[in-house]
Length: 222
Image 1 (cartoon, one colour):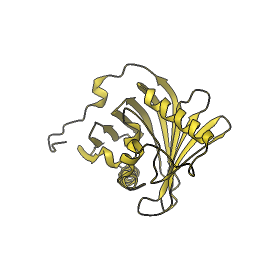
Image 2: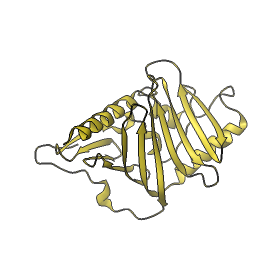
Image 3: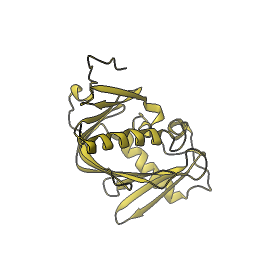
Image 4: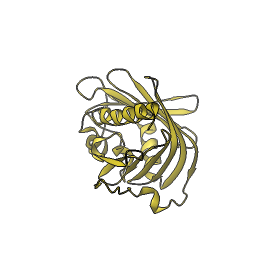
């Protein structure tokens, strides 16, 4: 593996680890299961936008899209996203080409093809969890949820100002189609990582093999 690939792999794994604590380990559960925002947190118009976003993601079946990942620390990645809701997601990186992320109902697998090793992280402890549940909700009293529109884009932002999990997660939807186009994570240090989806194709059949986890001879994966 070349130096640039090693740096990218390290940054992505570190980023996954950071995101575990973005809103605290409890975020994934509170996002999904706490019922409602307080009246002080959102207006009626905000509530409509948030509900539209929740309904759009909950209704997804499959999607395939190119993606570009850019961080304010200078790292750049790109690849192809495959999603078969509710639990199966594959991020196949072309840069670095040695890296693939695969999810199951329990794990996020980080597959390093050069090292021939797979690292498993609990999916519930990652920010992917809210996107990989049957019924999606972005509502909690533990953090602030807001919504706005700009130039035909609806932006749903979850933010926590204090504590270990301080940071923001912004989801951007095309306001006409309510298709997810981008998400941006800003951590407590101010580092912004954006993932932009391009050329999405919805409702197509995706092969089961896309979501298989490789078994290397020198390692037993979970």
